[in-house]
Length: 193
Image (tube, rainbow, N blue to C red; front, side):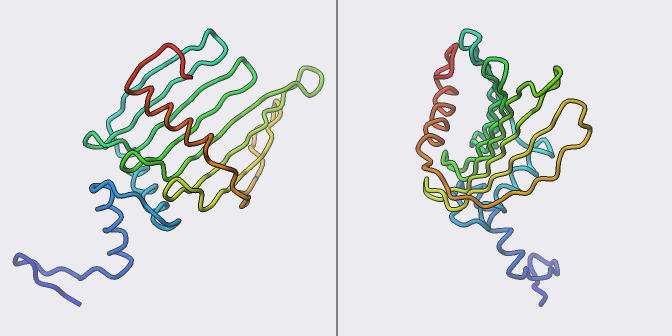
């Protein structure tokens, strides 16, 4: 089907194009996605904007007396928060990178990746990885995925691991961490608590 608009001939969007257009518009309007499909589309839009350098960023650091330290990066578009990336370590045996995807100051997707290491034998070490993907609508989890794998010293290839669907845990602790990160941006302190 052809549509004449402003003297130009354009192909009318099909339903898929309309959905993608709607999701892009939702970024501009700051609406919060409510389904897995909308979350994935808005996530993809944010990642695309990030990779193209279209998001502004502010970086804050903290150090809790050497026990925990980290870097928090806030990514915004036209002043609207889109993503919080929190990289931190606790003592010397745990590191993490957590990403909180945001629309209208509401969390809709969290990607949490933690790594703890330990000695296994003859001075070799093993890194245990845990990745969690949490899809949220209206501050409630609608789908949770988890991936676990281990990498030992000298191992050159990451083991193939697949995301598996798991029962969602209560999200109150996740939302509390998210609120802490939001508040840290407003009131900078030496320690994230």
